[in-house]
Length: 320
Image (cartoon, rainbow, N blue to C red; front, side, top):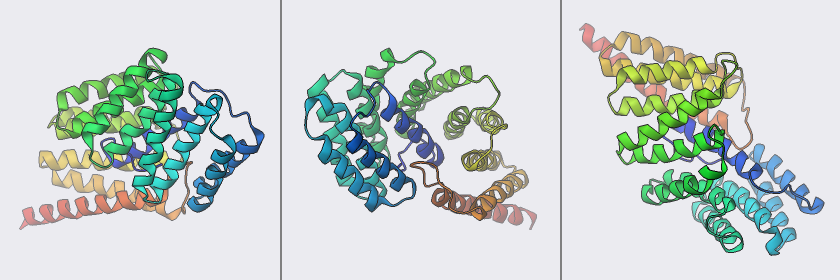
């Protein structure tokens, strides 16, 4: 999926990817037409391989086969959203926006503006606009999605966490920290209540986002605690994404120490973060569905290297 904005680039991808999977699964009947469902699966497989031209062809064929029958509106809307993700990956933002708006308009006309299908369609438009700094539009769609979907979700539903986090993050991006952090903390509280085995990647992602927010607010002790929670929440898990979370959490802890003036500790933490990143890059371009993680790791590494070099220069200068 596209780098939909949350608060830092890792949760931006990961949280909305979780949401993207739910959009396909929530509140909708299964794909029934064997002709076009095959096209959808082919498109998804191509997108996983980053073969976006092939994915575009497959989704377009699926849309042609679905047609404009109102009984198939929910299925058509979901395929439109899948195609929008492909266009966004290809940097065709205007086309992606048109497709997302078309999907929203379709379900609103077919089912009504307050139907859950309209909520799921809105839930993708919010992150899309947030990634482009169009915060007023993002907030509008985040609020619309939360208003429509919260009554249909359980109080401990993971999707509720994501919706709360999305709205909180766009408020933080607009410097409305108190409003935003209240929603992010609520999302984190719900996520923590779902953990039974001491290992939960969504909790780590929410904790990471909370850490960023606290650090921006100058609440360094809270930020440190949140980053450490991100490291601990997924301690029993393995995989590329888990290690990417750990790299970002260590980066966050290092930035907290820089803000405190503890440059030596910060440099050590940056080195640990870079060590994880270098190991990840060495394993090859592994990707999760809709998540170009290898490319994203390179992007993350550049930022960590820059901050590491700045902290090291400051530290060396303090010795002179």
